[in-house]
Amino acid sequence: MTVLVTGGAGYIGSHMVLALADAGRETIVLDDLSTGFPSQVPQGVPLIRGDCGDEALVGRLIREFGVTAIVHFAGSIVVPDSVTDPLGYYFNNTVKSRALIAAAVENGVRHFIFSSTAAVYGEPDISPIPEGAAMQPISPYGSSKLMTEWMLRDTLAAHDLRAAVLRYFNVAGADPQGRSGQSFPRATHLIKLACQAALGQRSHLDVFGQDYPTADGTCVRDYIHVSDLARAHVLALGHLEKGGESLTVNCGYGRGFSVLEVIEAVKRVSGVDFEVRLAPRRAGDPPSLVAATDLIRSLGFQPLRDELDLIVADALLWEERLRQRASAATARAAEPVLATVT
Image 1 (tube, rainbow, N blue to C red):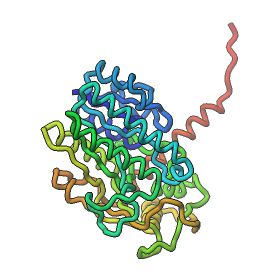
Image 2: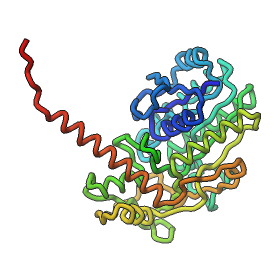
Image 3: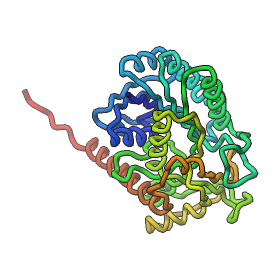
Image 4: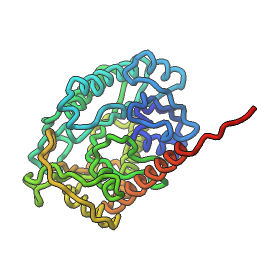
């Protein structure tokens, strides 16, 4: 009953590994460490450095560890990057997912959890967005995820495999116990960047576009705490393991906050009034994405950390931890090396 978590050394994946470990589940992690960190994998959980698109490697791990479920987080997630490098995103998010699914089918894995995204909806004309809304992605990132959803749909019809597709809205925050958080230096998450500005690690914070058709002209997003999101994955896995049917669910709280509202929350929680600058719109950013959450709640999902200030506080604490670690590492590097006479 071992669970294989791809991308389990990354931001969201590591929180899933923590949730599984806290529940006493046998878990292994497969991560190429391109954006993940070994330090975010709990002690005692095997970490294999490798590519989720390596079908032979995945097959060997399934057989060696007795894997019965795969939770797939590995992939590229920066929307603007997908616009400039579409082929890279289709390769990393779609082609490699195809190999992973093939390895699962070939080796008798029964349950598959896929990390998808609200970007599959594009610019929906309904809010909150139900799972049955039209899927019209406006970025290669969203398209690459949707293509994997289609592959899973067709695979489920042909093989003895059940899957849960979880469409994330905006993930933020960090483990309340300080065990993991968003550590990748090129991360583009608004709350992370705003916290860095509050801590003086950025000279200012850019707001990309203030002419959207929203209340204050900035994009509106549904922010979900990463620990609540991990709990949603555990819930979906349990649903499948108890014989539940395959399903696709939104993961959010059902309410949105604008970019300016998030910035005000970070200023409020941190007590720091940092500089904010207006910048042009970014490609691939829809005006508003807010989840309809009736389906995930019908499965028993009850958020525990669904207040914006609480999400910000956890993220801010994690950024402070990262800053302290970096300062300590710099201090150690500056220490003089004493010669030893033998």
